[in-house]
Image (cartoon, rainbow, N blue to C red; front, side, top):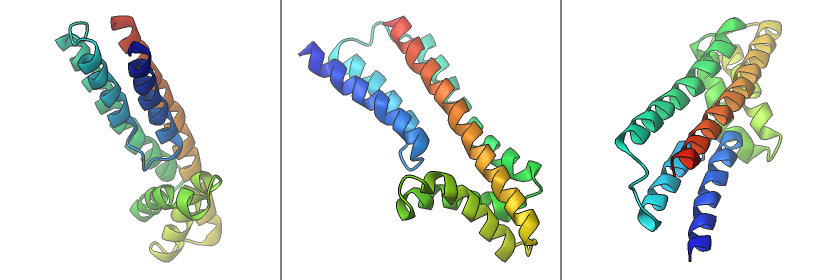
Length: 159
């Protein structure tokens, strides 16, 4: 039975990493679910209060990294709030409208369209902001992947 429990926990961790590419999947909830299921299946004894405090800090860091990297990517290339919102909406919608490549095109197209329509930015600037959005998204994926990896490694070190 232990093997089945570990398979379930591992699948939750894998889904968390898939959430890096499909942001509609709440990655951090799958990681936390893996921890909780470990406690239910085996024991919460190894998961001390300090463990939960550190993991809580990582969760806050994940949310911070996600929002800040998009904001920096758009702002650094001259974008406005419209570009940030467009990028975020494109990030959520893109993978469903254009499977696979939509994860990259979504934030780019969203930022460009928002800048053109809402902020009345010229094409050249809007495209530059779209590139900034894409760079922000990619840096967010890398940063969140590292943080999630650290969270899971720390979990395995504690058990």
